Length: 197
Image 1 (cartoon, rainbow, N blue to C red):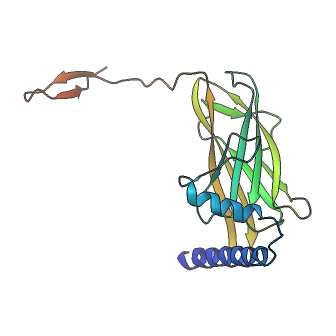
Image 2 (image 1 turned 120 degrees about the vertical axis):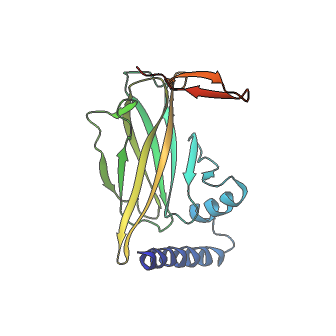
Image 3 (image 1 turned 120 degrees about the horizontal axis):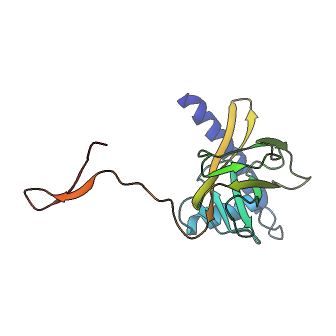
């Protein structure tokens, strides 16, 4: 398993280095999105890149084969469908990819009934990204997450990236139910005492 991961990482790094070196050969050539993302990631906190134009944010993990830019359209409201625009950018060019959507907490948010949970797409010629709209239905106020997995198969195995897109519904967070009551112990420190129900 470790050797397979090392081979996959080596393959991705080799492709990226070849791509960067070929882009550096022509001074008049525009920087590729992969090179720009690498340069941006050196100046931004880990995992967060400068957003693509017209997007709220971009999420990428160092060395990952994909980055995901997102924009929530409109104001999310409980019970109403909300659309999220996605741009999935690949470091390996225009290879076809599969994108999967998942929500861990169905009591917080659900995929719309007409929304497929997985699609297969290929970037247009000479591009390294695909765009997609995903429709979700918030079930309560607070912050929920849409998990987006992008992946493709190689001879050495599957290369993938999973990111969590934050969707804020209303201004409040999730109310936590407290158990027991806070009391002071013999040293005067606060402790929570559980009471039988």
